[in-house]
Length: 258
Image 1 (cartoon, rainbow, N blue to C red):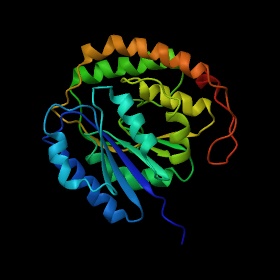
Image 2 (cartoon, rainbow, N blue to C red):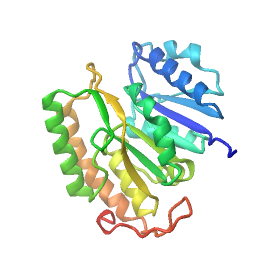
Image 3 (tube, helix red, strand yellow):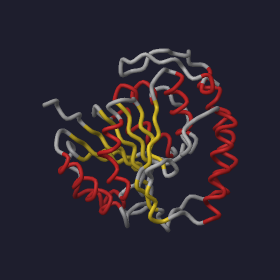
């Protein structure tokens, strides 16, 4: 029987004192049931509440690690730090609202046997969304996705869904080249992955909108445009590769070569 790949779960958090216990309990329960070697890496982006205090009972330095940014460096920085600190054969980026999506992890692991990056999607066949975002958020989200594709070229449909599974080799190679610290880091990372020859596949997942989401559309829109333009310049500096990390041959997609 083949060895079960080790798994790292990277969870970026900011002021999650009310939810951090539930997040860690659900994630730890799933990983213990899964078996094999695993770790959870919480990256706290300079929370001003009791997030770190409430996470402390879970932290053992081995299975659960806690990294703290001394100043708010952005979600992109936090995910990049966690991905590069991770030791797993597989590395899951899991937003703080991803508890429902954890049920889709076994399916994503199956997909990861064939590709290097599995993008969890609320828009792909098989997705099960139990609570939608408000209509206004969905409308603006469509605009975000369209803008990202105009600037970055063809990417997965649900670029900004915070549930993505990476092979360790691909995660390390890509995230050590990601420059963006803000929201557009997802687009930069996926565009880099494809340009470097790693295979990317989108698959439907379970998901539920968290009503208390603190994302402000107005505060994100203008920085997103600047970040996307910076991401395009960054990706263009990387030579186009024709070999994927999993050893399969692949030709870089023209629409992702930017």
